[in-house]
Length: 329
Ligand code: NAD
Ligand code: LMR
Image 1 (tube, rainbow, N blue to C red):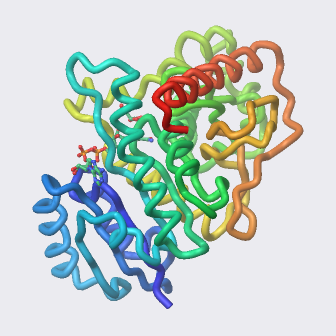
Image 2 (image 1 turned 60 degrees about the vertical axis):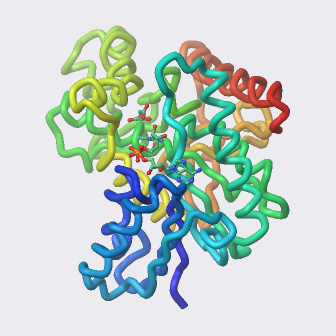
């Protein structure tokens, strides 16, 4: 049986960077056949249809079928995996509340359509921003789907953090492990290196030799660089991150389905872990076991780290309040 994967915003930039890698087996492995559903709005249908033609021309042996639609009922029908990429970007003069409202109008109906039409094992990765709150909105609208099946992408932030550490320590990125992101996929996020290792040794010790004042480096260099990397990419590239976001989406979803051998980061629903209010979709250190994300519990957070986590969680609480005020949740 093939896996049915729905990609919203499939005619957009990240969609284009995702489709061919999924068809090539990068997400679900070289033995898993895939059926792709490209869900767009009418304005994006041409680009999605063009991508579908190119998928055909790629002659991917794992690709069983491609369907392009602007009807969520068709797009999510029987979906096992949904990558919710399409979102309303912030336009000129748009306030945060307007952005939340516009995206609630997308992710509410999509969540409802997932509840009504997707397969019972549906797993949803929300990429479109504001990703955490969009995931919360979609989860709330999806009747009979456990909230744990809705996740927000923070893997890109973790990858950025690991890459910055690797560059600073002049080691291969693969030698850096356990760098969880806490909180929101936004500038308030907390990339936490307190448990990180480089080739199995504490990163903090290696950093002390390299940068001296580790705390100063974290506060003035590392955390702002990671947390504002999205803005840096927009400034340098003239458009938001695409290939790195698609890569992180693939890694997040692959790990969720196939399992992890160590911690990673994902925005998942809180049950009160680490004092995070229940129901918020928050980034935590996680492991994937038997197709389920499990929050890594029992980690020590010192006062400084606690304050960082609390600040990002407070932003998520504010976003939830703003959405509630719209009558959406
Ligand atoms: P894009 O503008 O190139 O593409 C978005 C596509 O979504 C468009 O084709 C549009 O027609 C489509 N779309 C809009 N509303 C839709 C709906 N209701 N249903 C289906 N499709 C819809 O944007 P992009 O560069 O691909 O980025 C997509 C989103 O990903 C943005 O919100 C961006 O901020 C976000 N993003 C998130 C991360 C992350 O780490 N979480 C990283 C990078 C970008
Ligand atoms: C990113 O982290 O690169 C994006 O979320 C930035 C953005 O605003 O699209």
